Length: 385
Ligand SMILES: Nc1ncnc2c1ncn2[C@@H]1O[C@H](COP(=O)(O)OP(=O)(O)O)[C@@H](O)[C@H]1O
Ligand SMILES: [Mg+2]
Image (cartoon, rainbow, N blue to C red; front, top):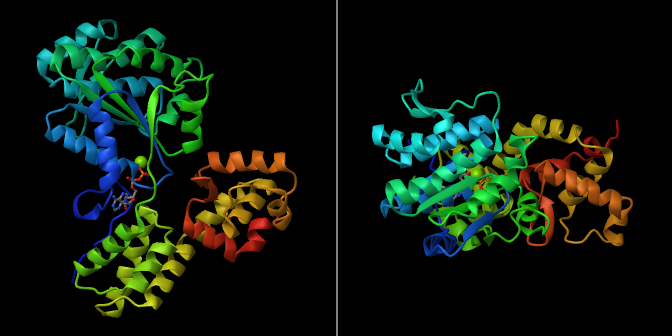
């Protein structure tokens, strides 16, 4: 009895990780070269976090200190400052010398060391009444101070889901504060990542925004299809299960060659094969796995769709049937979408909701199984309450 050779959910490493050689080299070179900060974007579940952690692992192995910080994990500005300062404190080597140094740099935040329930050492900061831009700047500048004065070498900082910083404060212009601190840092190389690609693109590409043109852009595409096929075949083979090329191609196609869905679908196909007690994959296993995936998610999908406005539902349904680059008149007529401005505001909303993604120039439903659900239940989708 073999355990399931596929993994999905959290970022993956080792044998569960494939390809990305080119993307890895590109990102590594840009960060190691150090001529500018880098912004990397791709839709959710393309493997950004996995790739970045692999690159950071390489930096660690080379003795380059680094920090990974997921902005989704911070629920307030205070929380962000505490967690980020703690991560930098860890880079500084923890211990009393590090605390002395950190204490000097952010002295009016009175850092003290606390130990969490799980034994992790964290910094506690005292903001007084309210977090101010000065306090935030001091925490952000801590990275440069630690790089230049404590560890004495350049530091790499990766901010994942960076588009979320806006969420951390209503009354402080956070993008401006971040930008003005970061641009003065000589010894820290920043990597900004995000899944809401249109938000991130606007942040770095809009002249009126503080981060305008402040980082080299890297787009993480889907993996080369051949690599995905080889991965599926290799992982099944590791459990002595055979999969012929047509079926491997079918798995890649059904999952839109998106790493998360590829692993999720393959994992369910493995369950089908194991249940049947076979040591090869059949088309029926793939069909059953796809059917199960759509059925298992149906309640969740239905709920998501029910929250959409009628115009948004129509756009989503149209894209499920026919991904498109240009919502021209013929397309809008074919799918009864109405006027161009209605379509574009609906499109913006469904992109912000993470339902529709833009890959290259083409808009499509991000989750291939949601697309299938939408095509299979048109009445529910278009019904207007
Ligand atoms: N290089 C890879 N090889 C195999 N599977 C991957 C790879 N990258 C991502 N995945 C799959 O996709 C899932 C999501 O990866 P993650 O790195 O969290 O994506 P993102 O950060 O872009 O949302 C992982 O749990 C894994 O199943
Ligand atoms: Mg991620």
